[in-house]
Amino acid sequence: MRVKAMNTPQKIVGIIGSYRKHGVIDSLVTEILDEAAKQGAETHKIYLTDYHLEFCTNCRSCLQQPGPERGKCVLKDDMESILDELDQADGFVLGSPVNFGNVTAITRLFLERCVCYGYWPWGEGPKTRHQKPTKKAILVSASGCPALLARFFLGAIDGLKRLATMLKARPVGVLRVGGVVNQKTELSGQTLRHARRLAHRLSG
Image (cartoon, rainbow, N blue to C red; front, side, top):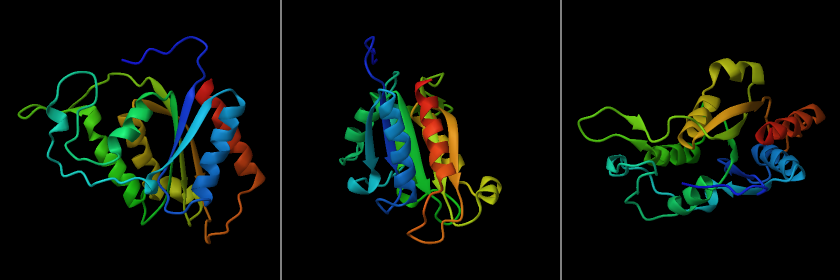
């Protein structure tokens, strides 16, 4: 179990499930992390596309291992190193654009690999290894449709909520951006100010 020393800066990690660097999702996550850094947090961004991540095969080997720590995956890729860092974090900014109504495929791949935080022995019902969330998360999505419609008809935020749950975090803020119709969509001042305000919820 991680024991955090007094006066140690909070560590906030941004996880970007976009295929485009410097796009809308990247810009929003960066804005939130930059504001968190101004509040004294240590921040880091993880672009999922930079890592070698295998698909979960649903072998359930990780789910058979008892104890409070995540189960060990049999796949040999970069997932373990990412999760080692996330286990040491105090909060997350989870971002994915909307592809075909939901999070991107790489975000979903990452979510499925986080099954290792569960516990599901053969012949029993599924359980979680932790009873209460100990961390915080901001959820960020962007889509071509208006943000209000995205709230009711798209599933990206639900997918990011599941990811937050698996990472022992509770969502403390959501940022949806709609009307992203080209690669050069500019973010409004209002959106950027909202992103900065959300950053304060991670340290509050």
